[in-house]
Length: 247
Image (cartoon, rainbow, N blue to C red):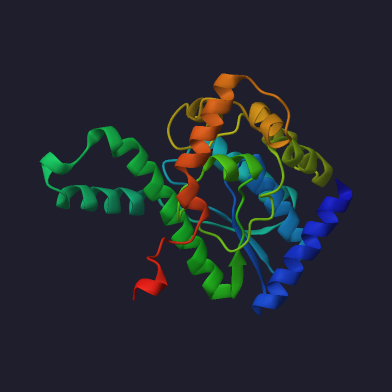
């Protein structure tokens, strides 16, 4: 795992150099994936890396854990509360859609996705100010199943963890010295009260990790993973375009 850390630190440095920018920024949620990225970018750019804590209808524990992370790796950080901005924008959108056209069954997801996209826009504004790249936090399981918001937490420049299973991310976290409280908490995107990744996906990270390693898994879980992968194919591609030869 030490070799993988060294490789990723060097890779991050190379990507910044090739882009002609100065450093890196990551949104720190209080979860294990963003914690690992925070520790990695601090190693890659001790003086040119920033963690941004972006509460938006977030729980108190998430903010506390995010502070643990940035203080633990001594990462320069900002905190920008987007709650009021989100409420204003979401209510404005809702007010302009005809009542009969507003689908209440989509409202919870709509609300959550807008939060993720506000965070993305904020991170890019900060990145532009400092001439930094935005680093994503998706791991292999999230990437394969599409468990991220398109143009939200999926809207980034670099995805250093995309080939690491959740188990490997946890191992890397221990190796980097991420606070134990962050490593051992239940994975959650913090989308709503009581929300966890595994409940929402309908399977576990352990099962997905086994699948990604080519190990046998229960048929029911295989069907869930295949369905999530196919449904989210558009998230892993550039915007679809018509065939050029027709023009």
